[in-house]
Image 1 (cartoon, rainbow over the protein chains, first blue to last red):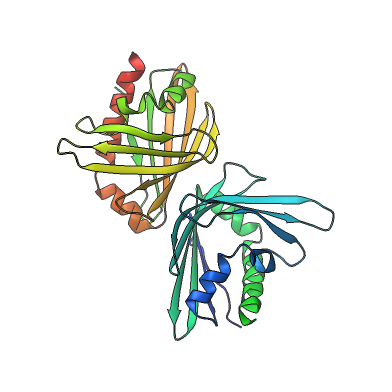
Image 2: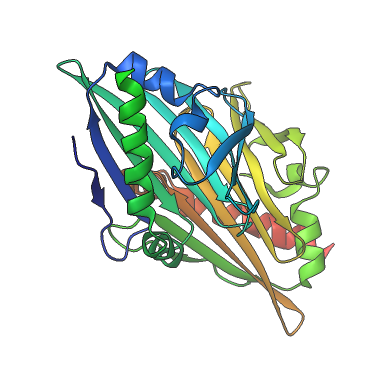
Length: 155
Length: 155
């Protein structure tokens, strides 16, 4: 299984994560932008994820709600700023528990020999926000989501 | 007249500009978020600026169109991500001539002794995009807009 690569240079606003998936680019892009498939891979396995809104177009809003076994809900939302299938997605991301802390995410899809390299850059409003995200267990979370995505792509 | 202060540390994704205005914070915030007043200060004097959309609320879209003496048009747009009057605004910014190159702008308003310090942080998707904005004459442009804003606040 391909490993997740995480780059977060000290003192910068950015986190870059990348990983190679054993599937063609069209399929990877389509899978990641399909509202019906989000609940099958986005977020950790021990939470359910429901798509409240997902209007995959320039200016469209997305909103997902995660729910744990005790019924606690966690909302995430943002706005799509570019949909360039199957090459590039740009969108904002906000956890509703910390409103006003926004990040800008740029995801690129590169096909090499039938596999797809996803590179996901997030830039934060401050280095402190960036460091907070790293400390929150972001790498483990991304690894679990992308493991689930890899399983889904095999089906 | 207060000078514009510009900070852009080498190798980072951010530009921070700040300036002190001789007006109370409520008035500065109200002036900057009033669609009727945008044409009077936003952008250089030798272009006209028209507000196409300006829905100042969380998730609302803004779009301004600048026109030069030859009739050439330049569109700018983005989405408001936080409106916390009179303290803080967060929105995205895109020049339509370079779609997909987005920046995330956070503007804070601090009142000190009846004056208002505006601090405007922009984070870019890459250091290269940030450096390109600096080289495009962004400092001169911001200085002219904020000179115009200062004049408007005196009225």
